[in-house]
Length: 100
Picture 1 (cartoon, rainbow, N blue to C red):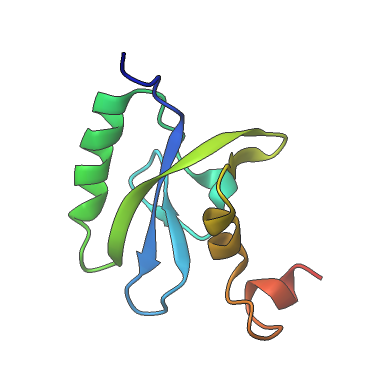
Picture 2: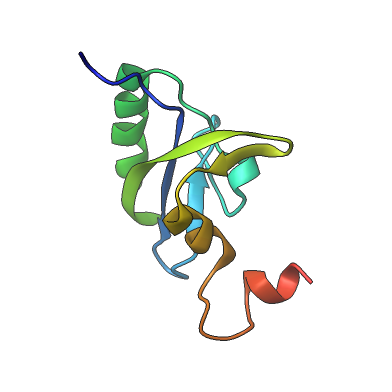
C-alpha cells in the first residue's frame, strides 16, 4: 500500500547569494517559508518542481521538502529544513542576526 502524500514546499538555494529560497504560488522565489506554496497532491507537486527547476538563472538544487501547517504558514517537519531556513550555525549572522 502506498504511503499517503505529505504536504510539501519547493525549496532551493539562490544562485548568486546561496540563501535558502522557497517557490511561491506566483512562480517567484521568497526567502520566507511562510510565503511558500504548499503542495497537497503528488502529481501537482512534481509538475511544480519541474517548473521551479527551469529557473536556473535564479536558483540551484530545487527539491520538495515535507511541511506541516503552522500558525504563520508552512513549517518544516524535518530538522534539516529547520536548520536550512535559519541559516548557517557556525556564527551569529544573516537570518540569525535579523531574528533577534
